[in-house]
Length: 259
Ligand code: 13P
Image 1 (cartoon, rainbow, N blue to C red):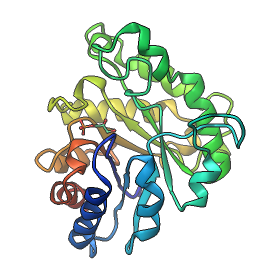
Image 2 (cartoon, rainbow, N blue to C red; image 1 turned 120 degrees about the vertical axis):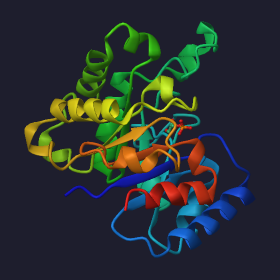
Image 3 (cartoon, rainbow, N blue to C red; image 1 turned 90 degrees about the vertical axis):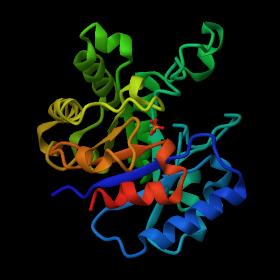
């Protein structure tokens, strides 16, 4: 039986005080919740203090990580640094970092600044697995890719690229998040049966020995109204939640929908 995992990705939101207030309010609402894993990925600047202030089993994680151990890499954060501050997770390869920045209105000339690729995802995944940080690897198709009938092949390529050269025995902590780009922040949630179908397809892309144990989340407009149906699907093992994780009450309801 896979323990469901619900992670709030705050993206670039909240002041320092709002961050603390949200975690404090959420803590009150979920302090007696059992049998589900949950946490937040706040902006880096708040991560260390939130990770060290939590009184219950809320896991904290980073929205990105770099693969090198240390050195002249201006602006980046290593797996060892995440370990050092008590972080548990790192999101890798979110569509908002995969080249299009998730937003087609961003001019092509700036795309290089955000151009996460399957190769960088692979390097970051290896670093997390070697360094004891739980990797949450994001994959998902754009609307154009879906409409062209390429959903499964796009995602299979992303998964193969992410896992390239990693031996099965090291993949234990891996978490995958299926996040259709067209469902992120749009209010257009993916139909639960279709989300489940894609998550099962992703499971089938994994080495046989980890298929039954690897947790695969759905992300994209998850909210208190649709979470229970999504999380009741057999191949959906929780959620990666953006907007609905910003309010303690909403996120607590999403977590409770997984119990
Ligand atoms: P929304 O829940 O706001 O659609 O964001 C999903 C997401 O991108 C989480 O990583």
